[in-house]
Length: 261
Ligand SMILES: Cc1cc2nc3c(=O)[nH]c(=O)nc-3n(C[C@H](O)[C@H](O)[C@H](O)COP(=O)(O)OP(=O)(O)OC[C@H]3O[C@@H](n4cnc5c(N)ncnc54)[C@H](O)[C@@H]3O)c2cc1C
Image 1 (cartoon, rainbow, N blue to C red):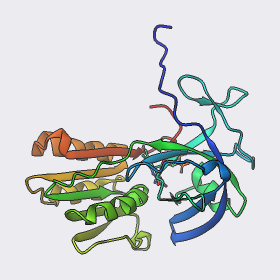
Image 2: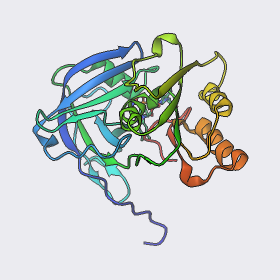
Image 3: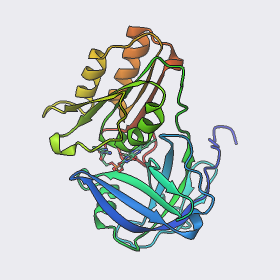
């Protein structure tokens, strides 16, 4: 039908359950998922994405939705609560999958993560595109906010082997810092967001102040408007070739992760 959007069908959902939970900071929790349906799960390239299906509000079980040609829909036609996360670690023998979830406010994902315990059901679909590590880059600049911490945790070991890596991370306060897998050629700088500043403003300033040597490769992810400023800075002001930067909006201020946009 003219005007009807048809998207490529994502991988089907696999039912899983929580096996354990571990706080990484007061604001970031690692959740380990398991289930026989994880057999054959492909964690993808570093910083790939997956969809996590949450139970309906107030519910406990998940109903695996069907693909409508454009989006996932529950049997009653309603939109399921789905959020995008980063696969952190997948153990194909033990069938365990780790994700890390940022705790903020009373959002569906935060509430789910806080309430989840051993046996809590969920489902995952994935993975989506990850990052190809350019071993020829002279250096990497990696920038992100708290939502990008899991992706950065996966990227760093892959990069440490090949080049100098400068990491800039915006956090809400000092206690949101976490240990990262840094190699000898990795330098991490934390930026604490100023009260009253827009999310990502401190990150943007840090990126502006960073040196961008010839042949640098940039990876940045965080709040959509903030990373859009980073994108414009890199491409329009600095004149970086588009192939030299991967810049991704991970969430949008004031908008839920399953709202279209
Ligand atoms: C490729 C990709 C990988 C991602 N990986 C991860 C990951 O590994 N871990 C992770 O926690 N997130 C990750 N995210 C971001 C996550 O999908 C969004 O933050 C999502 O909106 C969170 O859902 P929610 O239910 O908490 O909030 P929503 O219901 O989506 O939003 C409710 C409100 O909270 C705000 N909000 C949403 N996220 C944040 C945030 N992080 N900080 C402050 N305010 C926020 C929204 O603007 C909105 O006003 C990733 C996103 C992408 C695209």
